[in-house]
Each structure stands twice: as C-alpha cells, then as structure tokens.
Image (cartoon, rainbow, N blue to C red; front, side):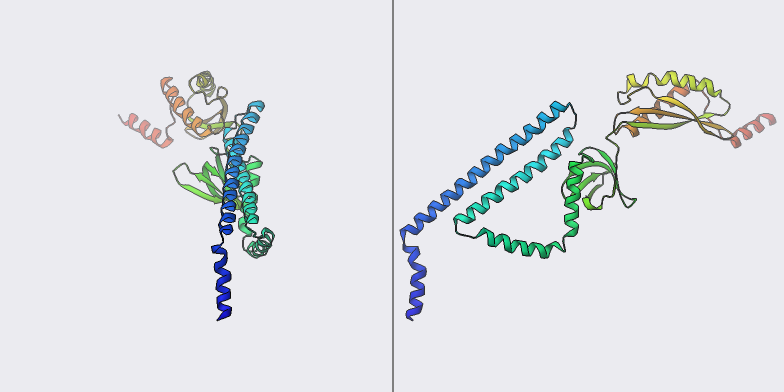
Length: 296
C-alpha cells in the first residue's frame, strides 16, 4: 500500500508544482516562436526562389515560363520540407526527446520498407530527371511509350516527382508513373512540319498546278501566324490510273503541325476549286460515264 501511495505521489506531485506549469508554458512559447520563425523563413525563401527564376528567364531571354513554374513549385516544396523538418527536430529536442534515436529507428524501418518500395524510388528518380533535364514541360504535347508500347499521347497537365498527368485529345486524363516512361516524344520543343498530300486528276498538267499552288501558298503565313515560312510544294509523291498525289510541306510553330495540316487542306481545297483544277475521279466511274455518252 505504501508503495502504491509513493507511486501516485510521484505522479501527482509534479502536477501540483507551479514550476511545472511555468516550464511548460515557456516551452510552448518557444515552440510557437519556432513555428512562427519557420513560417516566415518559408515565405521569404519562396519569394526568393520565385524571383530567382524570373531573373534567370529574363537574362537568358527565354520563353520557358512553363518550365519555371514547374521548377518553382518543386524547389519551394523541397525547401519547405527541409525547413519544417529542422523546426520539428529542434522542438522535439526542447522537450527532451532524442532525435538521434528516432532517426535510427526510422532508418531501420526505412530499410525494411525500401525493399518493397523500389518502384516508388524509381518513379521519384525518374521524375527528377524529367524535370531537371527539361524533357517536357506543363503544356507540351507529348507521346509516351514503355518499351515501344504506346502508353499515352496528349497535353502535359502536371509533372510531379512520382507521376505525370497527360490529357488526351479526346479528353481522357492519364496518370502515368514516371518510372514507366522509357521513350518520350515531345512535339512542342522544336518547330513542327505540316505535311499533306493533295490529290489532283491525272489529266491535269502537273507543272502548271504546282506553280499555281506555290504562288498561292506564299500568302498562307500572312493569314495564319503559326507558319514560320510559306509552305511549298515538294512534288509528286505517287500516282495511279486516275490521280496524282502532290505533297505539300510547311514549317510551323512548335506543337502546331496538326493544326497547320488542317489549315493547308482547307485552303488548298478552296483554291483548287476556284482555279477549276479537276479533282480525281475513279477510272471505273469515268468509263461508265463515257459509255452512257456513246449510247446517247
């Protein structure tokens, strides 16, 4: 009984001591000060990081705002984690909690988990390479493959350390682990080329048609600013018994090759009609019409 009373007394005695509450209040004030300082430091560092990337972009005369936005978010997150981790360890030490023992225990647990988290580690490492090697940015149009097998194609919506989000042309959102990307084709880095084939009747004089088309194509960049230079006729790509395929190519801004192809098809269709250039007609239909004319 005496032992139980002694234990209870040892537990209650600190609660009755005014110095206990004084020390606790002091520690709480210190914790609040640490948190406040950490919050201010994070805010200041975030502004410094943002300003740093803005100055770099301005001095290099680049137009990579999308990449800067991605890097700013990433660096700010990393810096924030570091500052709050330091704050947490400092606060724990103020309460007499051994940070070294916690880290040692976390190391053992981390080693055990690591064997089952190899895929996650691979995703994160690949994410770092994607961002810092500037393989693609938010807003770029990309095609992604895994061992030559297509995974997704579309516009990059977000880039994270673990995964990337791709919005397809038809509206599907694909969330792809970074570690599964073995081949990436970026259509938004360099100038694109719109290549189309225009069918013309085999009976037309191809030289005259090509000259007229080239003269018309010189007016395209004035109407559509996505074209770097006037598109040009490359020549006859193929032909058969009733049609000749004339290939046309035009250099466009990055990521605009598909739109440029649609523009060229529409404009050339209207031009050929206005010039009276005959469209190809299958031979079988022509023979049938000729036979009808003879019978009449």
